[in-house]
Image 1 (spheres, rainbow, N blue to C red):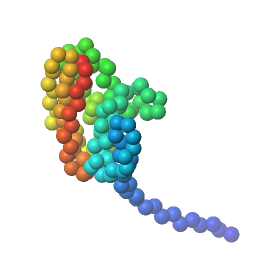
Image 2: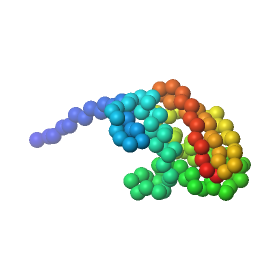
Image 3: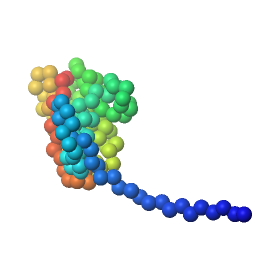
Image 4: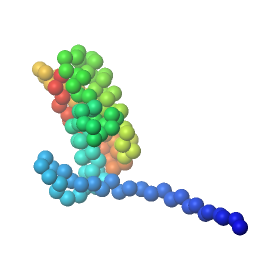
Length: 127
């Protein structure tokens, strides 16, 4: 008696649909571009290594920039943002960085190119 198995592999594409979050509650669903914007917001709003629910690859170590010189901040912030966001398969490129320093804050702007289109991001970080 011989056993045979026919195995068929199918590639499945996920829709990217997720819950729509506000500051206080879940307000429905979003998908594609809006879901990706929410993902980017969550990644950029999460201090890396702070929350055991997230892997060490999730978020950005923003506290690392406090008290550092501007050239270091520019280089490392760009690198950390790229590394954090490019883990998402929907994101193709993170580019067009600009940095504006004012007092103890850095305003970082950049463009995320995704499979859904481009997204302009602005993030203010204490330095």
